[in-house]
Image (cartoon, rainbow, N blue to C red):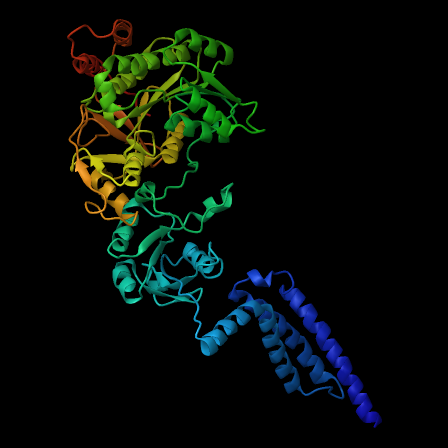
Length: 595
């Protein structure tokens, strides 16, 4: 009897030791620092590791304990049963929900609501995270998503399983997979993809009847101040590809860091984004000049906080008002100037050429002249592809501004680095075709396109502004930079795709009307002229344009611009002809310095 009592005592001691060992092993493995109701099935390995660690400790103890308190098989079987129990308890909500719907299905014929069948394009990190969120954290808890699988062009991932779902094929298989698997929603979860590749993927998706959604950038979700949805509609800028907006390591940012900076046209699309991005470089003062009172107020409201309160200086004035500009320069003495103030709508300026000269040419001459007189370090002119072989008053006025930068840089005693940055259309700016198409689609059409062959270069506003700031740092004075705009986009194809992405059919649900080319418009814009040579820079997205002509007489050219600005056009004169004559005078004898 005493032997049995001793054996029972040892068994009780071993059981107590086993309990303590199991608790400590689970603690070491991390089993007590997880919210198991919000943990994926992959974290079951934490429990497995904890039980395995306890087994590694208990089996030798049991083996060498004399007399042996329990058979080794009891330890193995007991720990196996403990593992099953731990998993059942930790994942009880999923087990209960799974059993409950099966019970209802068997006894009451109540089957769960069929979820939206989803095919995910991209089996990388973004695709895996998307699958998990759609499975376990749907944005609408009353709506379920059933992920049927992935497609990915990486051959090493084909037929592999990720988050319990198989990689079913490549992007070329999307139409067949959607049909065979009854897919209702295609989710594109690929980041850092070029515009051409994105459009190729989208073309495959558009061959199906499934809805198409996009996963926002995971880093954008982490940085966002407000909630970012799990999925969103595809926007026009996605068609260009997703370019990261960061700083190129080969460019020194010190020329724009810790400076007094002036941005003209600050309430405009480019000017406002310049103000947003320039705040990253800790300016001493950021002077935001515009004659648009409401737009300037809205921008200040957006940017104002405790950190920027002492930095932001809204300045309500017109770039053609010399006294107001004089007061600004005398008070703040800006060191770096970004001149984006300009009239930009081609058809409107065809009707009012004098305003194009007054604001675009005269305003640039006023601001740039004061920058020279007050010894500003850098002056950056925002130019446009419409300045090349100008067929419009607007384009001609901007070309004259480019030549003005060269003329001012050549003047004796000048200490300011004058530069121009030329680029094409930006998506989302006021007057851009994208918001125009959006409004027209919202109204039910028609969507208006000027010509079937109309093509344009496009870039997103943040990317364009980021490159402009890089160019400001790279300039050595008297240079003309051009941003690499990528591929041309056919406007009618952009309109058709925007309609399809709304789940509508072009020409059937939403008509497209060809209205004819407007005054001053060209079917295709050019980024550089035949006498301009592209020279590489340290930034792969920025090139310098060097002219093959030389000998500009800056004083004569500047005087003629001043005369045009003050006297305007004579009655009966052809405005475009006058501007083209001045451009010819400037281009006849000029050369932009090479870097």
